[in-house]
Image (cartoon, rainbow, N blue to C red; front, side):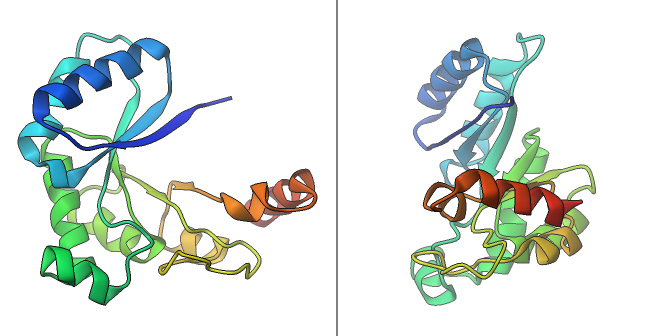
Length: 175
């Protein structure tokens, strides 16, 4: 199996680079950092990982899916879609492999970066499950149309009475 370490690193550049190096030594396949840490921090992470022959994929979080428009603008003073594209461009230019975003931003992010720039989307509710604290959720069909590369289906699986059954239904839906 492949391992995605969802730590959302956010600190000064050297500390993020140190943490990234330790993560790479652990052999994980993918981990994430925050774009809000800035271009210099993202570049420091990628420069530190150059020495690893099989380095993990590094994705940057654009806007948490728990944000609605008002809550996001209160902090970033910009609409989610616009800021997510700006963060994605910065991540792409810093040499990252992709971003974490909602399915609603995925298509446009690929258009302003590169079609091979990875989008990973949390908040997937495959069969109409409750949003709970997530504000920007989507189903599998929407994620596929938005060219999402990786979907994250958390609570609908781990809170299910029969998680294996849910996973099997998701696999059928994806195919």
